[in-house]
Length: 255
Image 1: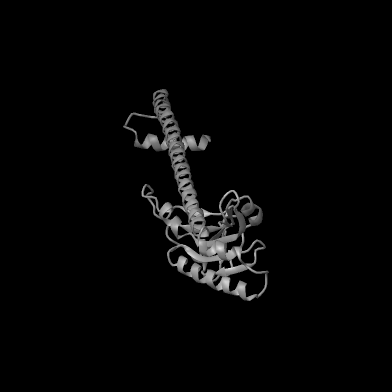
Image 2: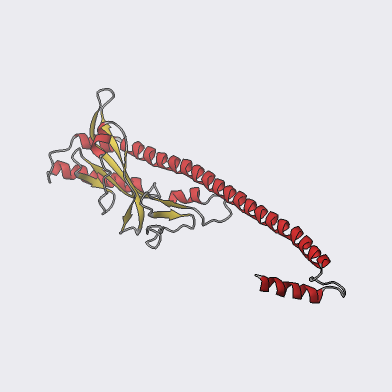
């Protein structure tokens, strides 16, 4: 430390005006006066910088929270629309009437004919739902009666108890290897008769992708169109605001 002070004193002494020397009491007083003025200024500047940084971090954090809350509300609305859509088609007489007159499980002629008619109806319905990847009708045991395509739906957990209670059953998102994107299955009850004498005869299962969520994630208030992603609790990215729906996106988010 004395050596550093000596070198500093020598450097200042060389650059100081003639007659000024740090060896003198006057020179040392001037040096300490300069340091006394600079050190508080530097400390004040650092504190101000840290306060500004914290303020910016709080602002960014609050903005992200607001975006997340707004996106969550919009995604809930999107999900409600998918459920309502399924309930509308499940109320079709074409489905409820044929389900109510199904024969026993197996390849009976009546069951095969009802399944063919229901499949034909579902195929026409799917053309009107851009986000739908598959539609299927099941009986009370979960056996397939008819479907719009070749893929079988993944039934949501506890679907029977939910349908018995008259409620939709929403599954967890999963990766559809055929469509090469993440999808979600929703099962809604199919009932026949007039309330309160109506009865449950089966269910309609819709399988939808997440293209409709893109409009939610592409928030016009966001400065970066690719800064929002929809992920599961297992940190699986389902879709992001850049429109990625492919396998390279449906991977766990790193820590």
